[in-house]
Length: 437
Image 1 (cartoon, one colour):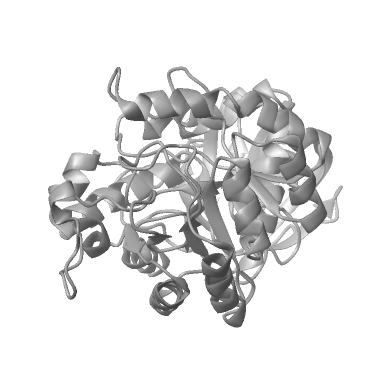
Image 2: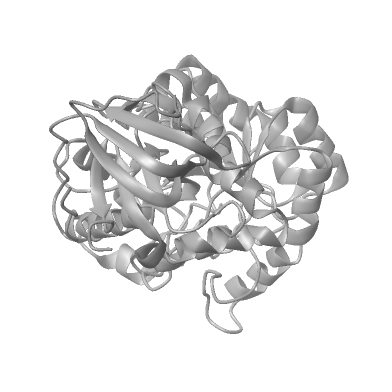
């Protein structure tokens, strides 16, 4: 089967069912490789996982993996399709058409890093998602949140000081026009903005519950929104069959959000024992990131207030993951890369950094079936009914063929160009370098 050249708009559907043979199987659910298996793909889905010689010999196209690992496509549960590949200044000044075209280019690169699904947690990704789904441009499956809903002066308020105070009937800010954030104060406004994002196609809602690193005006310790405001968004999401996640670092921000009915915490680096117990007791998801200093951290100007806030947040990361493990929290993983096109190539390397707290097999389970469980919380708003992150009959055929054993060496995904030999999404092959071997 011919490789899909970089830059090609889409991969052709195969003429006949594809049978993967000569493989070691990581199915996304079991923390070990399974031998003596073959996998049949038909009509974009996994038709069967077969044992031994119990497999078709006619009417199929055979792909011999040569003893390599076949595994589900990776899932990034905290990605910013529209915000990761341009600087903040470019995003605040560029035409929306350029922003979208840049994001489409990055979406193809995301897929070619082996990430076949992403949960987008702020940004105008709706049109990009539709273009990918229609086959106009290659990219991952996108679970979009739309604009992050934020209070005045909160993590999603990127207005300039001269725009404050806002006059009645004042025009929308640049961030709101872009669709990155939506400013809302009080339960009624939160309810309206929530309904707007669901109208546009949000699969889940995101609110800013506390101070942020990238934002300018809110110290990291500041709690944002009241329990009543969270409840307004939660009731709205529940009416649509989905859920609310929040940006939150501090215990107060997380606890207030949970008392308002929020079902997922994103970040949580300043987690404490009391809050961890509350998360566990409520069955809330803890979707976190490998936020530590080093070459893969989001970059901010030396000596800036943003960098100072980032260091405060970094200081809590180790303890947060230890608490997550101690209390057996439902833990998901994402990257949260922002505003730096030079950094997106490190998406797999950031995943590999999770071995600071977890074994390679635990990390790989988190980035496949575990993250898929979080995606499924969108319920009726799930844009891709069916299973991802797992290799079983009926699941979407989002597959990778990997040189080596990523269950023992997750760093293999840090170099996708060399180590990912096949990349398939929805039964279509976007990369196949086996033939060149």
